[in-house]
Image (cartoon, rainbow, N blue to C red; front, side, top):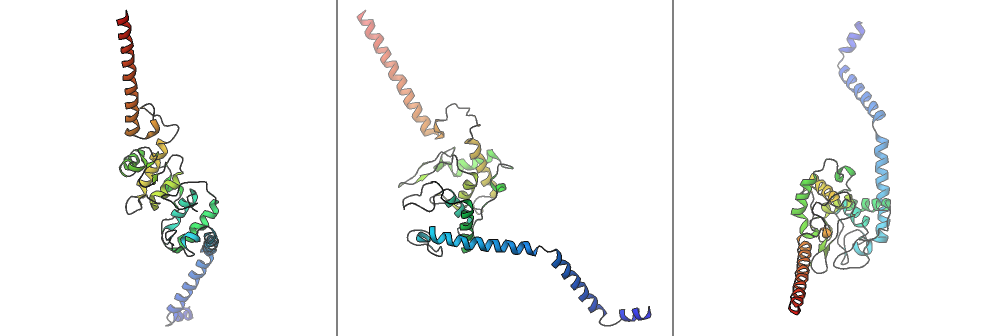
Amino acid sequence: MKKLSARRRHPLAALVVLLFALAVTGGLYAAFAPADKAQADDTAQSLAIKEGKKLFAVGCASCHGTGGQGTSDGPSLVGVGAAAVDFQVGTGRMPAQQPGAQVPRKKNIYSQKDIDQLAAYVASLGAGPAIPNADDYGPKGADIGKGGELFRTNCAQCHNFTGKGGALTNGKFAPTLEGVEPKHIYEAMETGPQNMPSFGDGTMSAQNRKDIVAYLGAVNSDDTPNPGGLSLGGLGPVSEGLFGWIAGLTALIAVAIWVAARTTKAKKS
C-alpha cells in the first residue's frame, strides 16, 4: 500500500493517467466509429463523379464545354447544382435536339442511374441546389390553400391558374404542369430553367415550394371536383369570356332568325 501511494504521488503519475485515458478513448473510437461507411460513401461518390464525367463528355460537352464552362452553344454549368441536371435531363429537355427559343420537353433517353451520375459530376463543378428528397415535395405537411395563393401570385401569369401553360413572346411558352412529376416541379422552382425565374431559398422558402407542388397536384387530379361545371381547359377568364361571347352571340342569332321567321309567317297569313 505504501508503494502504491508513493507511485500516486510521483510527478509523472498524472501524465501517465492522461496518456492511458487518451489511448483507451482512441481505441474505443476506432472500434465503434463508422469509418468504413464514410469511406464507402466517399468511394461511391467519387465513382459516380467519374462515370458522370464520361457521360458528360459524350452527351453534353459539345455544347457546354469539356469542363462545363459553357460555350457559344450552351451556358456554363458551374454552380447550377445537381437539381438542375435532374430536371433538365429527367424531363428530356437535355440533351437538346436543336437550338431554338425554348427547348421542349421530350422522351428521356437516360436512366435514373445515369442522371444521378451526371448530376454528381456537375455538382462537383460548383455548389448548387441538391436533388430534393420525397419529404421536400411530398403532400404530407403541405398547405394546399396557401399553395394556391402563392401560385396565383407568382406563377399564374405564365402558367395560368391551374398550370395548363400559356404562350409567351418570341416563340417562348410556359409549359403545362399537368402530368409533371412533383420532384421536377420543385426542382424547376429551385433552379429557374430557361425563361422561368428562380424561386430558391433566397426568394421562397422550402415550405412554400412544397405548398405550391401540393396545390398543383390537387387541381390537376382526376378526383378533384369542379364546382363551376365545365373547366374549359382551366385557362381562366379568357376562355370563359370567349365561350360566353360565342354562346351568347349564337343564342341572339338564333332568336333573331326565329323572330324573323315568325314575323314573315304572320304577314303571309
